[in-house]
Each structure stands twice: as structure tokens, then as C-alpha cells.
Image (cartoon, rainbow, N blue to C red; front, side, top):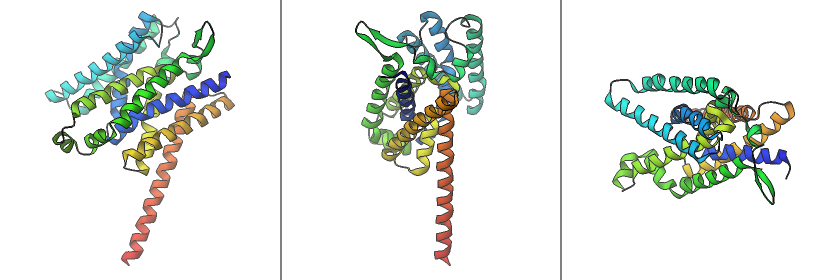
Length: 291
């Protein structure tokens, strides 16, 4: 299989993997959680990379996920203490974590395969060179297999527990009365979000992962309020953006991750325009009938 096709597959799997937990966070109106986790886990990723020299190491992934989840827990504890306003905690905690990661990368990892560009924006093309090679031959990027496994786990959780997640998102009190373990499922969703952000970090960085996770779900949310329809739509938007963004980036020699994120933004704007026009048309029809 050609190297270009391998990168294309990597782009699609990366985008679709991000869209699954992202859709549920958008539906729950907790998209800011992605930003919080992506910043919170940066120090864990950087220090884990310095120890392992690999962005696919289980130790790095564990360190990053734990760092992200611990920071989210600390922020929630600070909010509940009422010593600091909710939105202020994000501004007080996340920029210092990003600054710490950038400083450590600049001082300690500038001569390694990690720099501030990778930390912030990622590089899909670069990670495609790290192939899975066995005595019988090489079988494509290691990250592709990692993300395929992650996509499988995300889909099992997202589809298998869709009804319970829907109940938590749209009526938490009813879900609790119905015996749904809301805290457990919410914790698993946060864990999978952190795991996904860590796994795609080398491809998207800490900034573009927001677009990969939020924009497809936000576009799907404008078209439907049913999670059973929203999730497939978000995955479709992700796959289309990944394929077309990769093609445009290849044609015009642009950064692949940024190209995909830009196409996702265009998809969202197009869906938003259709949504606004549809609402305006419905309003005019209602006005005519009223007259």
C-alpha cells in the first residue's frame, strides 16, 4: 500500500476517533472540557516523552491521562470550594500548564523529535514515518493501529451505552432515578476523552485537537438533536474533512492537520448557514399562515 494512502487512512482514523467523544461533549454542552484536558495533560506528555523518547509509549499515555484527569479533578474541587469563580479557574490553571510544557520542550527536548510546533499543532505526516516493522515486512504507521484500537473502544462505549449517555446529557435527574450510574459513565467519558487527546497528540497538537473533537459534533448538532443520528453525522463530517483536507494539503503543500481543521471549520460554517436559512424560511412560512 502506498505511503500516501497510509497517511490518508491515518488522517481519517484520527479525525473519526476524535469525533466520537467530542459529539457527546458537544451534546452535553461541555466542549470546553476538551480545551481543559488538552492543556492539563501537556506537562504529562512532555515529561513522559523525555523519559520514554516515544509518543506511543504506554508510560507516556498513562502519565498524560493521569495528569489531565487529576488537573480536571483539582479544578472541579476548586470550583466547589467557591474560593474562585468557575470560569476563572480555567484561566488561572490552563495557561500556566501550557507555558510549563513549552518551556520544558524548549529547554530539554529541542534536539529530540519534539518541539513547540509539535506540541501546539502536531504533524500527521511526521508520525506516518514511524512504521510497524516485523521480520516479514513493514505494515504502515504504528499510530494507525493505535488509533484503530482507540476508535474501536470509543465506538463500543459510544454506541453500547448511547441510551444511558443520552439520559445523562438530557435529563441527569431522571437518569439517576432510573439507576444509571451517572458518575461512573461521566468518568469513563472523561477518561476516553483524555486517552483520545493523548493518542492523537502527535497528529493534532494541543490546539488543533479542539477542532478535530468539537467542530464535527457541533455541525451535526445543528442538523439534529437525536444522538443516534448526531454521532454518525459527526463521524461522516470528520471522514469527509480528513479526506478533503489531506487532498488540499497535499496539492498545495500545506500542513496536513491545519488543512483538515480548516475544512472542518468550513463544514461547520456551511451547515450553520443552511441552518440559519432554514430557520428564516420556516419563520416566513409561519408568518404567512398567521396572516
